Structure formats: structure tokens, C-alpha cells
Image (cartoon, rainbow, N blue to C red; front, top):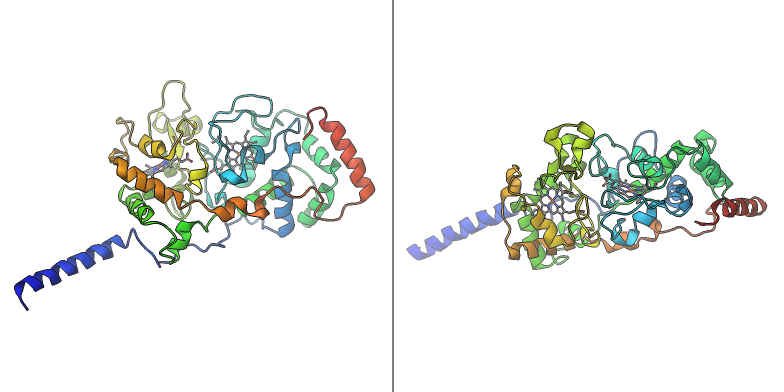
Length: 377
Ligand code: HEC
Ligand code: HEC
């Protein structure tokens, strides 16, 4: 064999080696989470169709706020991946919000919830925060007479039947327990695993553009994927990772700013650390970061490298403008149109899904209108 050709052959082997290496970042055909994977659930809250249906109704019901004007969906809008377009959002009474609204895609897998709440480790616990929380007041039930919300739901036409169907083992009891169990069962259904990127990972090489493929390689090279890890794009959903390790500081907090994890741990080491957000449908969920201060995806990426005092070596890399564009193209492939338009996650029809007694229904509706006036739901 002429010498030159041998070199070409060698070069080819080296090239193949490189491709093998790159297959870590371009893993088409490797096993990837199934589109219909189900989120894990706690033993005390197995999902049933009736419970999920009840949870959906509660999620969209303004009665969960004190004056009847604000539901979970007021802040968590399906078409935006269950976020809203504001930096922060005021509670029902106008008290300013403190943090940016988070997406609910795949929250069933998250082991700690909210931007800075390592202690909030179940959806059942989390659901009480907007309803009864004081910092900030969102839906406004803190300090109200116990049982007010349950009574209000009992007075609505559909709920007695729905709770009975969802919680036969509790005799259809309507209380904060069953309300939060049902809400959580619905939230665990909010699975977004069929974006173009998922289809690419399952073997459809044409599901994403060449630019997005470059962005995907950069996502690994720039170590984004060490924090935004796994199929939910957050280390907070990885098995075996300690909760505290899923909080990271991208920038030192300014005086008076949100201390993040340190609010809970009271440790100065934790000041300015926030839980890695999932990146599913991130192109739909601007603005970004815990305070919503970052308006666009390119800025969100650059924000990681903006504070030179941050010690995490992963945040000392640099990204060129061209790389940012490729990364943004990759993030765009996480937009799951089926998820944001899925009728199963949308506001339910007004009619009761299980038959209600018409006389009772009218009485209940009148009571509800009276109760909610003048604001109305
Ligand atoms: C006033 C707006 C508002 C309302 C109403 C609201 N939320 Fe939220 N939600 C937020 C904000 C803001 C955060 C981030 C909170 C934080 O980090 O402290 C959040 C976070 C969450 C999270 C955590 C997501 C994650 O990635 O960890 C879940 C789950 C959630 N909300 C569910 C609900 C449910 C269920 C309801 C109704 C009972 C509800 N929310 C009502 C604004 C709202
Ligand atoms: C050291 C862990 C870490 C690394 C590495 C990292 N991120 Fe992040 N990322 C975070 C944390 C934590 C936040 C939220 C910070 C905050 O709210 O102040 C975040 C926020 C984001 C957001 C905004 C999401 C939202 O909903 O507000 C995007 C987009 C993002 N990161 C993309 C990237 C990309 C792309 C890379 C690589 C170039 C990267 N991240 C590298 C931890 C990390």
C-alpha cells in the first residue's frame, strides 16, 4: 500500500475514533425515555382517572383563591408550558410576587420543588404553598377560618360526586388533604416527553436541524448537561443526587436580593443558590431565572458566565455568539407542541364529568355565585 494511503487509512481510524467519542453527545438510537413514561407517585396517592380529572378541575378553579379570582392556571398557563409571561406575578390581593413562575412539565419527577425549597419534596406539600402561603400571599387562604375552602367546594355542583368517585376509600371527604392529593395526581400527568429532541433521540435523525445538533453537542461540551441533566434537564430529577447539590449559584446575590437556598438553610454558603430549573418548553417560558430578570434565551445563557466571582468551574467557560445561537436552536427542540395543546391538560368543560343531581346543582351554583360576588370566579 502506498505510504500516502496508509496515512489516509490512519486518519480515517482517528476520525472514526472521534465519531465514537462524539457519540456521547450525538447518541441517536441509544435508549431514551419513552414518550408515554409515567411519573413516579407516592404510595398514598396512586393516580386514578377520576382523581386526575378532579385535580384538573381544581387546578382551573378560581374558588381555590380567597376572592374566587385566581386559579393555579392563572399563573401556570398551558400554552406557555404552564408558566406566564411576567417577571413575577402578584397574588390575588395585589401583593407583589417574589419569584418567576416555574414550568410544571415533568414536575412529577422533581425531588425538590420551587426555586429555593429543598424541604418542599412532594407535590402534595407544594400545592399548599400557593393556597395557604404567606410569603408571598398568592391565593390567600392563610389565616382564614379552617374548612372555608372545603365548604366552598362542597357547595359547588360537581365536587361532592367527583370527590366521592376519586376518594372512595375516604368516603369522598373534601378537605385540604384530598384537594392536594387530587391536584398532585393531575400534576403528575403533565408529562412532556415528545418534543422534536425526544424524537431525534429515539432515532428520527431528521427531527431536529443540523444547527440544533451542533447546539446539542455544545450543551454537553459546555457542561450545561451536568446541571440541566437527564431527560428532564435538571439534576433535581436525577436518581441518587443529593437535594442540596441541585442548587447552584450563577451570580452572587446583591444586597437585599433573594437569598435562595440560604433562606431555608440560613447558611451564607448557600446565598444566591437556586435549584436547577428544568428546560422543557423553555422557549415558551420567558422571562427567565428565579427573578424573571432575564428576558431572552441568549441572555439566559450568557447570564451563566456574567459574574466572574462565581467559583464553579463550569461557569468559568466561555461561549461565543455563534455557540449561543446553536445552543438556542437546541433549546428550541425541547418545545413539545403536543404537550402545550393536549386537551387532557386544558381547562375542563363546565359540565360535571359525573352526573350531578340537577336540583342540588342549581342550589349549589346559586350559593357559589352569592359567595363569590362581587368579584366572581
Ligand atoms: C400567583 C401565581 C401562582 C399561582 C396562583 C400558583 N403558582 Fe405555582 N408557582 C408560582 C411561582 C412564583 C413559583 C415559584 C415559587 C418559588 O420558587 O418560591 C411556583 C412554583 C410551583 C411549583 C414548583 C415547580 C418546580 O419546578 O419546582 C409547582 C408544582 C406549582 N407551582 C404548582 C402550583 C399549583 C398546584 C397551584 C394551585 C394550587 C399553583 N402552583 C398556583 C406561582 C403561582
Ligand atoms: C452549575 C450548574 C449549571 C450549569 C453548568 C448551567 N446551568 Fe443553566 N441554570 C442553572 C441554574 C441554577 C439556573 C437558575 C438560576 C437562577 O434562577 O438564578 C439556570 C438557568 C438556566 C436557564 C433559564 C431557565 C428558566 O426557566 O429560567 C437556561 C435557559 C439555562 N440555564 C440554560 C443553560 C445552558 C444552555 C447552559 C450551558 C451553556 C447552562 N444552563 C449551564 C444551573 C446551571
